[in-house]
Length: 65
Image 1 (tube, helix red, strand yellow):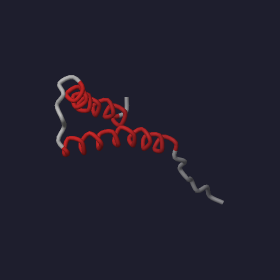
Image 2 (cartoon, rainbow, N blue to C red):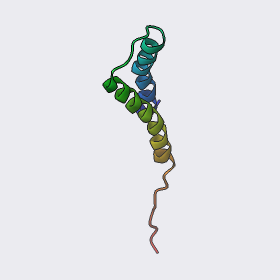
Image 3 (cartoon, rainbow, N blue to C red):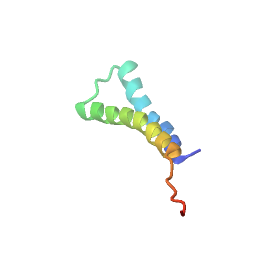
């Protein structure tokens, strides 16, 4: 498994704790925690896109004439 895909799963752990604290324990997050959660969500969205671009980029090879 590529590191970029594995890091997506690793990013989900702190986000899960954030959601459980908010929903189950009724802990209101501080503004910095909200910013951190949004950063994690954006990272989860961007990483697969970057991995997709990296896998599908076409290398331009110049052939001798």
